[in-house]
Image 1 (tube, rainbow, N blue to C red):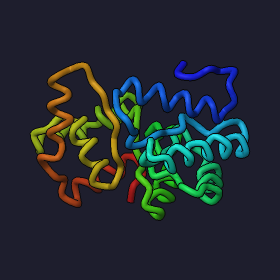
Image 2 (image 1 turned 90 degrees about the vertical axis):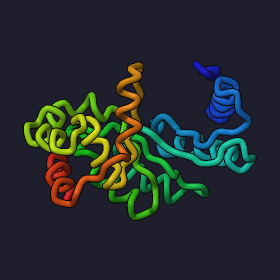
Image 3 (image 1 turned 135 degrees about the horizontal axis):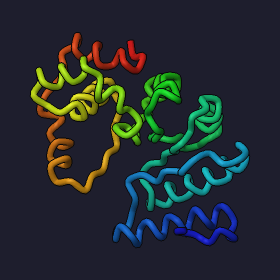
Length: 193
């Protein structure tokens, strides 16, 4: 734990930020993300106020929230926040309806939607014969095709790997672009229009 669980919520935020600065060996963070909304909106806003104070001090440049799957929670945070989140990081999978409403909300407000668990949660998309055929046509892997399609519709897929080959593949995804018909064929698998 990067903070004392017995400390007040604002102190936990400060401790966690200090731990991140030390671990990353830097003097500021590009973005600090609240792991998830708390049990009540009041508690979430209490923590958010401390995040805003860190942004005001210059130690944090941008703020974000993760694991926020209820649109009304996100709307409430954005309307109450002095510094609204720039980033929403959520799992991107069928069980959440691929966050269509949340992604629309983000788009309308210029917020970045970052997907995580993107490949692991979507084996049906990656193994879909149509997706595999498209990947062969573009001479890329299904994962590259999926990630590229997401970036083309404004989603920032988060990924990590221990494989040097997978890292190269991830970095190469901007070496091609899906034409509109192919992009539509891919994104229709998760209800994008």
